[in-house]
Amino acid sequence: MRYTTTVNRLATEGADGWAVYRRAKELMASGTDIIEMAIGEPDVPTPESITTAAIDALRAGRTNYAASAGEPELRNALAARYSSRLGREITPDRFICFPGTQTALYTVMRGIAGPGDEVIVGDPMYATYGSVIAASGATAVPVPLRAEHGFRIQATDIAAAVTPATTAVLLNTPHNPTGAVLAGDDVRAIGEVAQRHDLWIVADEVYEDMIHGDTPFVSPLSDPEFEDRVVVVNSISKSHAAPGLRSGWCVGSTDFCVRLLPLCEAVLFGNQPFIADATALAVSRPSPVAHGMSTRFAARAVRLAERLHEATDLRVQLPGAGMFALVDVSSTGRTGLELANDLLDQAGVAVMPGASFGASLERWIRISLTREDDEFDIGCNRIIAHVNGARP
Ligand SMILES: Cc1ncc(COP(=O)(O)O)c(C=O)c1O
Image 1 (tube, rainbow, N blue to C red):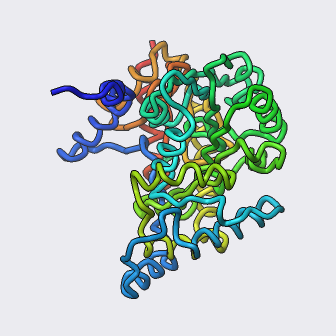
Image 2 (cartoon, helix red, strand yellow):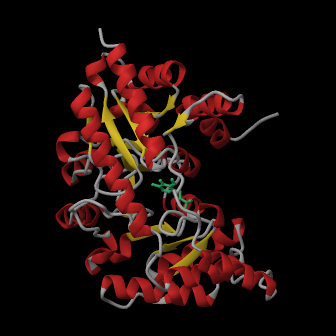
């Protein structure tokens, strides 16, 4: 049977990136002792206030069809949150609710990029971005994120990558996997490039509430001058330790939301009212868990750096936010993929090869900071023992 070019393009997109992790899961399922430091699940359960709100709403019969742009109470709650954070009014008609950031990203991208278009994106990037851009029909144009700039995407690099086919820049701040947080000056300079070339800026801000370094979070939406071209996507997956609730949204201009809605209705027709009720509660007050997670992840990143720097030649890039730390493994003479495979088979530790997130991280691995402290320490011990034992 015949399949679309989109399906064929996606078949190869990022497929091998998860191979080490898949093998780790198989080994764990067969009883092998593996410390899993590959994936970033929150290290606490979803706050009870949120699960209770969802259960109460379910019991109250909130299983009807929702408004296709999102339940009014949730859009009002989101409008209040963004108005307060940005210091100017952001009206409810600027939001569309989705089951998670991922669906928001997919739909937004389909709304602004298509075959023949180019989308500029930092390399490394979050694992699904290649597929999201490919699914729209557009071509991803990777711009290397460099360690010497703290992995912050540079406006000059974006400007150099712009062609007449460029329609959008896909930003991720705070960034997965590097933990980089764009400073106000970065955001301003990127906005100016987008203005000059009439580009959209899509900003994935899922780690907004998980800053643990010195650079404060600045959204591209914070500058009213650029707001017509900025679309933010976000969710409660990270901030409220609730990835399984699948609750996210996009914020764009009113016109953008009006234009995007028929596409949303072609896919979703709204998201679940009982989840919307729980999300409205979640976003109307500070997260009860984000600060604790950020503090623990920051402490583990520092501990990882202290341990590895003292005992090995591996170099840890301290993240400014989020759930991961990158480790430069070039001193081992092996690629991140080779080391990740060896760590899994010989040391019983699962980490992600940096190359899963882009070619520029070929000599890096990504370590999740979400394991409990004692397991995290055992994982560090195993990495140190392996790297030292295997040193030529
Ligand atoms: C940068 C980034 N964007 C989006 C997502 C997916 O978020 P959601 O669960 O809201 O779909 C993740 C999940 O790890 C992520 O790291």
